[in-house]
Image (cartoon, rainbow, N blue to C red):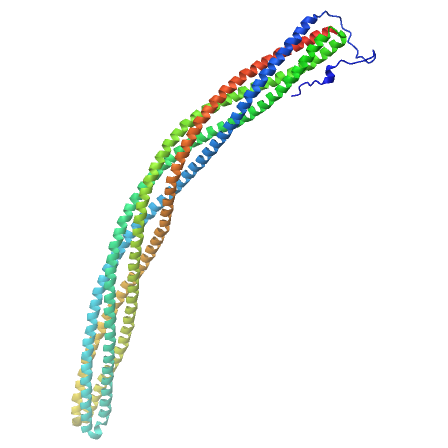
Length: 625
């Protein structure tokens, strides 16, 4: 404030002025003024100034105490706001993490539901594979029996080939007896014996092939029976897993419901803390504004102390001037008195405006203290509700922690069992693949059988044709060919019998080939089914293993929740205490500010009195001029 300052020169009257140097006096009508009244007014003005000075110095001390308390309160409020802000952020984080846990849990629930259905389907599929394996084993047994019939028929063909060879030898003997006429018989007999020898060799080759086929069929049957056992065990294990998964689905449903209830409690905490935070912000803003306003008022009051001191000096000078009126140049002194009074009046008016601003600021501080008190009271109530809701959250978290640990344990067992099932399924697929290779080998050998049988069939046809030619030649030479004719007929009969047996072999081979193809189709179905099941199991195992990590993350989050919830509870307790302390500080601040406002009003009254006296003094001094 620009208060009037007086220096020593201002107090001294001008010396040795000539008439020309003296300031001209206004031409005013002479007015009679009681100099004694003038002195009394100057004394009263000085007393008022001194009274104001004492009051403002006292207010300065009070404001400095209030300023220190306000600064301390603002710091504590800011610290409390920072703590509540952190709680708010943590509660929001809890809410988000709880929502994340719900999503993960619902995903796990969905996964387990689908997995349970898939495992149940796999169990049925494996049971069917076991039943198919039983059917294949039975067909394999029949296939083995059919292969033995091939051996029996081939043995008969071998015997007939040997008989044919003996008859061909007899034909050679008859040809020799016929002499020159039997030369053609000799050639025929030799060819028949050669054909019989080939048939015998082919038959022996067929026996070797059949022996290989029988070995392969036995291997297939053993492998299929092992597949049956493995699939029965895998099916049983899959049923157990399916039951466990259904239990886990129920557990996850309960877990999700509990988490959702926990989330509702967290939302309540979040909502209450939002209110708490808003109240704390209001308190902090009011405290900061109050601290700033108090500091500004303190500075203003300090300046007012100086202004009052200057006014006191000016008041003393005015009093001295009223005394000087009795002995000095009245006109000149009256000029000085009027000028000094006007200057002091201007300063007092500025001092009055400043004090009005102080009173107004103190009223605002008083209102801010009232707001802080009310908000602190509300925050203490909100903190109580937050503590209740946080306790609910803690109870839910403990319940969730218990469930998730049980789920995690069951999850591990399911993954291990699922790995064993997949191992059995992979083993069955490998066994079926090996059996498929064996069947393809059998199929290739059946083709070899057919080729060999065709050769035997051709040899028999040739033998039959040669025997017919021999019979015709025997008729041509008459009596000399009678023996050869009889041998030819016998050979033809053997060829016919061999052909009949060969037809049986072909029929059996066709049956074996047909059964082999059927078994091959069923084996292919097993392979395709197992490939599909293995792919499904592998995917399921991967999903479970991947989500096991999610369960682990949920476990970690829940454990952190427990710790964080306890920390939040403690922080809320401290915030509640802080709110109660802020309330007490606000009440004290309100009381002190009210008292300071009363003091400021008193000082304001004094300044107004000062203004009245100085204006009166100015008027009287002007009247003397």
